[in-house]
Length: 640
Image (cartoon, one colour):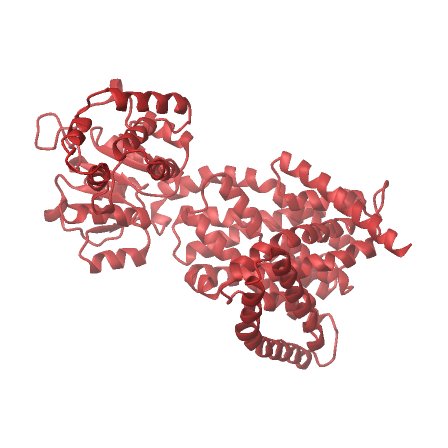
């Protein structure tokens, strides 16, 4: 009978979680929110079908272990070091400030010290899952604020593990608190010391032997045994299962098979972590939340507006450009999985009451729902501070002079010198004069060491663009990942020089259309160009000649909306076989060579030195000549 009760509760929890997840996805919300709402509906404080909380929580403990194990496998010390000073110092400062703020508010509300500390800990954390979803849907994961927010959240995750250890020790209420805390830290160190040789020597050897069996089921079972078994072994050292799972994951991450291990554990993690979030929802007292909506509103304001403002201010004080600082603060103004875990730990330890627990979860869930709207509303605010208040921004132009004698006529201006901008600079450097506009002080320093003229500042600020002398420039290349800043640069540049040739990168077809309407000459849609290049190689793999494959690609280049591609390919194939084009005539002159040699010559011409410049032109009726600055009636030339 016990087995049937276990099965019934498992089915109830999974079914409720499935329904909640489907509804959340259909509404464009985080799946975590769906799990929590599902838990509320089957919880003991809501009428209707009820699950056994004790049984669901027991199953959910597996989810906690797998969740922390997966986070540990994904954790990378090198990534943490690459996060840089702003992310490490900024995130640490923000966590401490919001922890103290939450504690102070809790004490004012009459809560116990530990309960107030847990409230502050919940407030201090942010979810990388939620911010990745919001930024990913907008194509801004590679933007400056996207990279900083993700690094910021990574540091927070590490801080959460430390908070769990410290708060758990504080909850013991021992007279020898510092000694107990030191013992717990020492035991964690001993566990790690014993685990390191196992993780670096024994586990890789075992995983390689099991992987050599070429049986995925055995490998998945091995991963589950390692994750659950070693996490459980942490309890012999007085550590929590969650902390043990994280440490095991960090050690396993050093294995060459860590990516395969992560891929195999994720399906298990998703199922059992879903049970964990359902169990969290079952603990919520919905009537308390409804009756105490002013407290809920206060928690939401603290969690979103106050924490977001603190984070933005810290990032700005650490030298981050104003717009990046504002958007970083906004995107991390939410709480999710680790906040729920902290609240659950407090509840399990008996220091967080059901009412405060419900308040924490209600505010966290609301932050997930409200974040997209808050972020959308913050965009014009960030743009205002960025473009209209340069006196208060770190992104104003630096005072260092630019060598005008080398650049100030017929030159190119490259906005942004990241991966894309650096390649463009390499293409231009040996034949044409160019100047770079860049915000990152490290990149600026490197460019000056290479004797490349550079202006430090944001190209979205008119004063910075003016220093680049666009009125006498020939080409402007905007290689910035942020679409909003790109629009500001395009508008400012076009006002300064209506005949300037402008080349822009984008990741969105909607953005491409907007840029073309604003008079941009060339818009490169990154994913589309990548797809075309891969398609060309796929055609070559079927024996299609280089000429025919290139002609097909060229016809498709102006159709990133995927319309009429089939007709275009049919027409292209027919025209290539029947029309005596200049290129076919050239190819016919190579008849003495083998067909493959002729194809290789065409490919070599197109891919000389690994560089290929492509563009999406505006319609023929909207094209115009671009005379050089020395020609009558012109201030900018056609570009190279």
